[in-house]
Length: 192
Image (cartoon, rainbow, N blue to C red):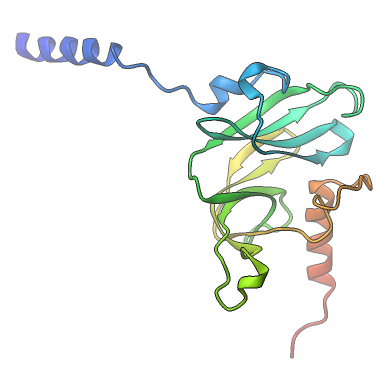
C-alpha cells in the first residue's frame, strides 16, 4: 500500500515538471484576430461562414502550428477587423493544404473544412498540385452553435473554382454553397 502511494506521488511529481499542452480551444477561444498569438505573416485565409451571424472561417499558419477558427465580428468585416474566436482547431501535418470547402459524403449539406495532401499529378505536371483529394483531417461546422464537430465517413476536399478564391464578395457563404451543392445533386437527372 505504501509502495503504491509512493509510486502515485512520484508519477504526479514528475508530470508537474512537464508543461501540459493546451488544446486549441483553451488557447484561442475568446481571443480576437488582432491578438499577438494569432498574427500570421505566412498564410491567412478568411471565408464567410454565415452572413446573418457575421461568422467567418479563418485560417492562420503560425510559427509552430496551423489554426482553423470560427470568428464572429461585431458588425460586418468592413467595420470590425478583429472579431472574436468562437471555436478553434489546430493541425500539425506539414504537407497538407487547407480547404474551406470540403464535402462530407454522408452529409453533403454540412459546411465542412479540412486539410488534404496536394499531391502533384504526374500525368499532368504542368497543372501543379492536384486540386482535390481525400481529407487528412476535417471538421463539419454546426452553424447554429458556431462549433466544429467531427466528420463521419469519407470527406473530399475540392479547391473551389470561383467561390472563395475569386476575390469578389457576392454575399454568399459556406452555408449557402453547401445548400446549393445539395440542391444541384438532387436536381440532376438519373444516370442510365
